[in-house]
Image (cartoon, helix red, strand yellow):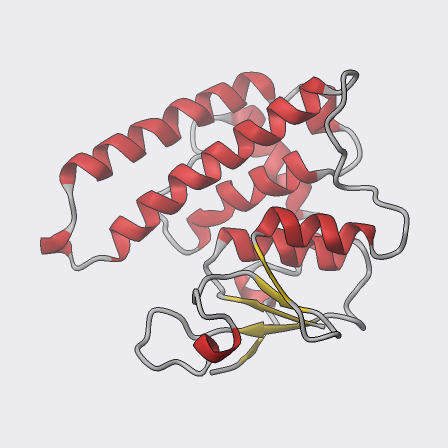
Length: 208
């Protein structure tokens, strides 16, 4: 299988952490896609041009980090990261939803920051920065929840992928002045599955 990502995509990092956590390095080749470039060969692989994109061994492609993560987690018949919602785990669902909301808002912020400075919308920048700080403050209070402190799972993977955006966009530093969230992120980074996705240790092969 081939997993297409870009180095700065937090959604791509979500999928890559799952690959690492599930020990799928020998089954999933991680490739760096060229996006936002007219005529990129990657568009022949995934017409939407988005990442992550998983091209399965049977030639079928899958898009969306949540779907890809669930698929990879279940490959061995023993899913450990993705917990289906049920009446007895609503907290799991709400924490994952909050982490994804955080990540989605940051993705809008990043798209705006990628624009030339004279084309950026001050209103969007202000709105998304304020939103990201509010949610980070919420996580500073919520991060001690057992689901966020226990065995690694999708809420943790999504949230750490969000806060690690500061690697590529230093202005988006959601850990400063949030000691509990910062300690939590430092612990997650120590996991080989997460640490391997950091910039200095990123081994994705370019394509397109």
